[in-house]
Image 1 (cartoon, rainbow, N blue to C red):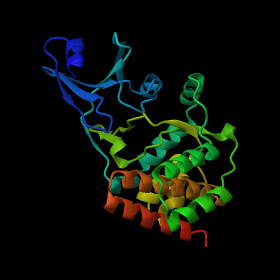
Image 2 (cartoon, one colour; image 1 turned 30 degrees about the horizontal axis):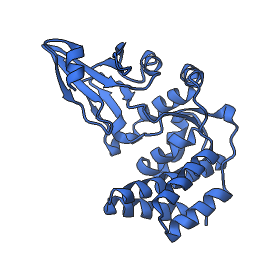
Image 3 (cartoon, one colour; image 1 turned 135 degrees about the horizontal axis):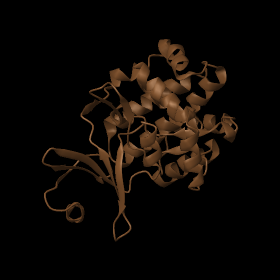
Image 4 (cartoon, one colour; image 1 turned 90 degrees about the vertical axis):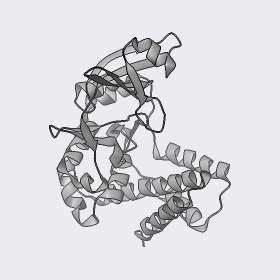
Amino acid sequence: MKQLEHFMGEGWQLRPAGGATGEAYIAEQGEQKIFIKRNSSPFLAVLSAEGIVPKLLWTKRLENGDVITAQRWVDGHELKATDMNDTRVASLLSKIHQSKDLLHMFKRMGNLALTPEHLLGKLMHKRERANFEDATITEAFKWLVENIPLLSEENYVVCHADINHNNWMSNGENHLYLIDWDCAQVADPALDLAPLLYIYIPKTTWPKWLEIYGVDMSVSLLNRMRWYMIVECIDNILWYRERNGVKEMLKWSDKLKNVLKERD
């Protein structure tokens, strides 16, 4: 942080803004307040131009190669889990998934699409590394292998890949943003839709939510969402097991069992 304080110059006060990476800061000088981040998403400019994230003010490169970005500070609040049924969430995610500029920018940077096969391979590697034997997870992997989704890569979109309610921010003017793009991938849109609907949206309102998003609740979409949700559950079980988060691990195990039952 001292390096950043030196870079910002005299009069600026920096404090951590939280987050998993520890690379985000709030910078203040008098009445000025901005959001500073080290090595944020390289397509922040496109996200800013489309109004998906708060306005990008400037981007500068430090001598050590790190890239610093500054965004307008937004006085607002993170959405609560119960707010995720807000129609603005479905509308903004639809806008993101339909953005050709975002997709072009991501592909131009050489990022390859995250196929189900690749995602499954990464998950299998995580399990092998964890050396974790569990009957439900074994059953889940068998189902995943037998039901790999079929979707042409030309239908892939830019997915945020971390749609936790804490990453949705509403400002005082009722504008909604989706922040923290460090995990973004080109993938099946069901990669985002699955955790969002399964975790936050009552199943009885899925058809209405998807209508606002802009698609029908087809059998194909439901099967793909189920597949990605099983991946999400296993990934979280392994993540919390590694960190001794027993309570969260059991919660995701229960969720996995419930999703697996759907196929019966």
